[in-house]
Image 1 (cartoon, rainbow, N blue to C red):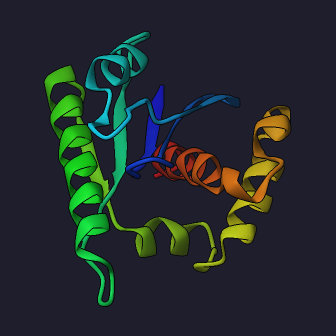
Image 2 (image 1 turned 180 degrees about the vertical axis):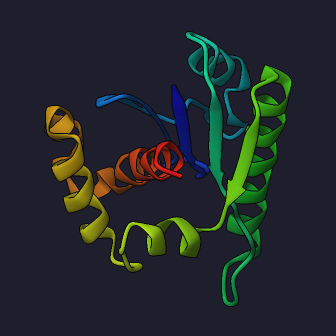
Length: 146
């Protein structure tokens, strides 16, 4: 099994893929305290996992200080939780996995590609706000085909 994690403070997701099977979950969070590390560890430790791909994060110009801090906190919590799981992991920059899947920064294109690749999950990918789920699945798909 390969896991892809789209990092977010309130909107991240975890995609699990294995030989045509897929599952997606919103990133477990604790309001105002970031990621629920215990729930995330349970999620990624449920079955044997070969590798985890985490979308690498960096600060961007013109981002607010508070939002950057919260995202960085969530990113650190995710990385620490994954490291504690003992599962090998790789940080992958968005430009790398999106280029490999011939995608751009367009969130709706990511949603459409995820719907094509994982039609059984279309109910979980039907709204524009589900782009984080789509990206988690696509990151896992990238890792599975790497």
